[in-house]
Image 1 (tube, rainbow, N blue to C red):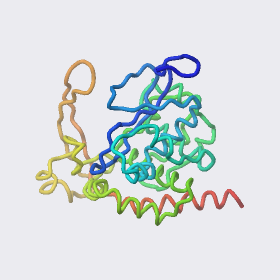
Image 2: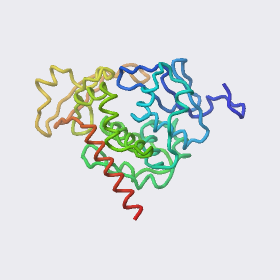
Image 3: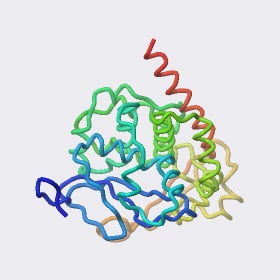
Image 4: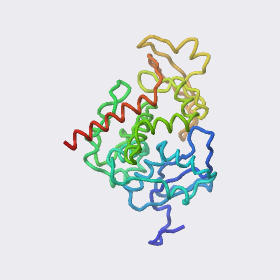
Length: 288
């Protein structure tokens, strides 16, 4: 297909979403932004928005549980523009906060450098995490610049989860929801996600040490080893696991992963409350 300028759609950044809607999995709306020249099969549905800032804001909504909840409530089994085109997106509230978090999630290599630079705003450097913990690099936002760098992509499981939590809160705030409504949506409509969150454990460096998430097969230790030898280890104790990595060109490579105690779980509803309070106080102070 071509756009209004008779250019092929593959010349642009696009949002792609899984076409089939499965309401019984962790997430129903699964989407990301793909770079120019990338192709996909018919099992995905792509959306082209020439305004790149709006493209990222739409992806921010799609990656939140708010957008996912609305897709679940539609009753549809197939995802197309007649559904995606009616999802609410605010282009006025918390724009910088939503854009920078979405860019940090998706800009994993140089294919996204143009997207990063065209969406850049110097105010991104003034942002910060909504929590303070040793599992997060507190300088993530302050060291950003207009020129994309490989070091900007956040790779730890804990950091990427925190970006998604804060993105959920920001999208809820932008649409005028309350924190109780956000928590209710999570509690009632995302039972699989809740089940996974309740039994996913992070080490001191933010790496998943154990999870019952079926889509993360091979991540972390097996349950028997985890329960018997690792789970309650004292702070500072290290454990090692050797894996065969076959995800890069050149064939399989053996890698040894280090896990450092203590190991903790996250409470998503509590994290929502903390992030909500942070943003409310931030903008209350800014308006005075």
